Image (cartoon, rainbow, N blue to C red; front, side, top):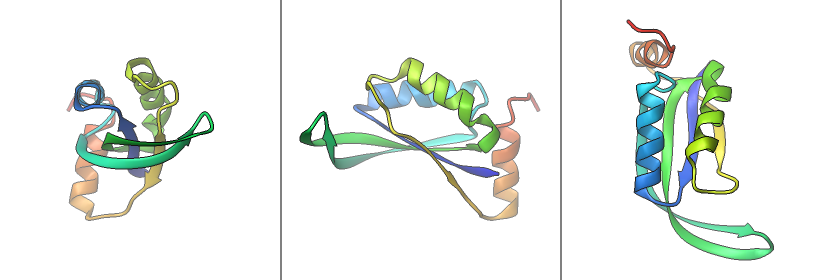
Length: 105
């Protein structure tokens, strides 16, 4: 199943580092990054921060490896790492599948 791994990071530097590693290791075909404002509860305190959200386009079979890599590079104690299944245009999804397969083309 193809999908999006949704990740948030505290700044663009950390998000870019994670994105470059995911794409260069062929764990993801593409990573989109954009600023978001987040409100959340952390350690019984209400927090409000600016973060960088990432949409990581990949295959579900890569989720475990992605999670391991993200945790090793992330600055957060508990990063958000969620998988969302997607449907879309076949040719584009084929491109995602090929470029997140982990195999050289």
